[in-house]
Image (tube, rainbow, N blue to C red; front, side, top):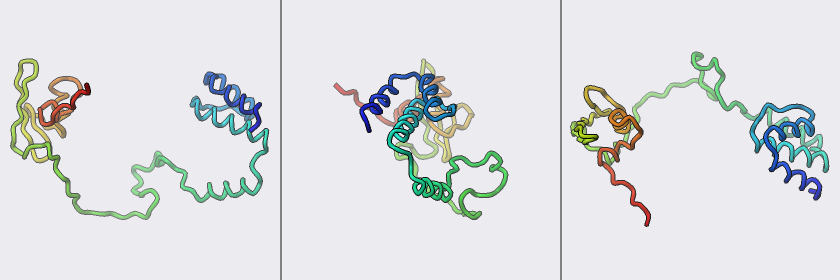
Length: 170
């Protein structure tokens, strides 16, 4: 890379996104809808180098096109996929069975009642086999129970004293 190109690429780092989009249009010949600074900087730098030192050969372009045709480029399923009943990327097949869940070692056995006083009120939570019960409402996690009690996010195990808080470094 020549010193002139290197200086121009380095100057891109100090530009605003608006300036980068303008420079992209100048260098590439068309506008960009992207506001991603890193993407714009890389594309402009690549284009400047390609203009100065030569673009890809026809053979390299053909190989890239061939690879792109063979690649599965979809990152998200199509919007109409949900109701189609078709699995992506493979033939349709159904697998049945149960998955063994290892219970969390910090959690007491089902039927245990956890108590916690918060703002002068004692709260009692019953551990169920598939969740927790507090004041007649079932919750999937202790964090959800702690959130219902406090109104803010808490680690449920920490809130109910099932784990020790991390030690502060000196």
